[in-house]
Image (cartoon, rainbow, N blue to C red; front, side, top):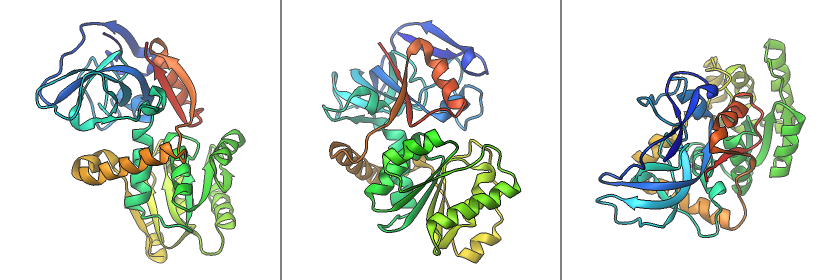
Length: 331
């Protein structure tokens, strides 16, 4: 087995290629021969000990994979050797083999490529749960997405359109805006890299102009920092503000705005949801695979790397240069 592992706290350059024995599954586990691994922002945090999960070293980053089941442990009845699957191991995915608990392993359609499957469940799962269960997005409502060109943001564009919403995609460059329009966004906004007070006011004004007099029904905030407050100021009566992530920093919101707009600030913890409400999670997956087969959604892969170059993939995410998803193909 080969893996790109973190042996000490550090950035992508600190990852080291190692070789070792292929693991064996324990009770309720399977071993997957990884064919592709999705790259996500938490992978950049976990190697620096900045994520809520801090695995003992050495470990490999990589929270989602796709491949073939190579071995099954005791108590695994619904999965079999040779089956094509995606999985959410949480970490250790940047490797030729990974152990995953049976609860986090999902069979994939025969026609779904490994690279698409490897970057499907975290982004679409998070965004679907956010819009369907947490925001209860309705057809005809206006959805504003901050960080719309990233993995979860791009998924939210497709899902928002599939649910019948008007989608406003907010991004940091014209290149990203064009990417979002190609995905189906109805409107796009470009915000500055530095968001001071004047820029916040201008950003709020631009959102209001596109949203119309009633404001934004749902804000999908995958950015945080100083970008959050301007979005809250544009919310409609009884709007829903979704807290997805905060690569720009944890925002400070004046809560008087939530009173004045009678709106909700709603957390989205997809990982915990899958454990707490497994039946609803399975229902969501069924809808997502159905939409994929109908070509309503498709992972937008903008860059692929080899396992040996996994560090470069993480750097691309850190530099915020990614459009859609980045994948590591594992030979």
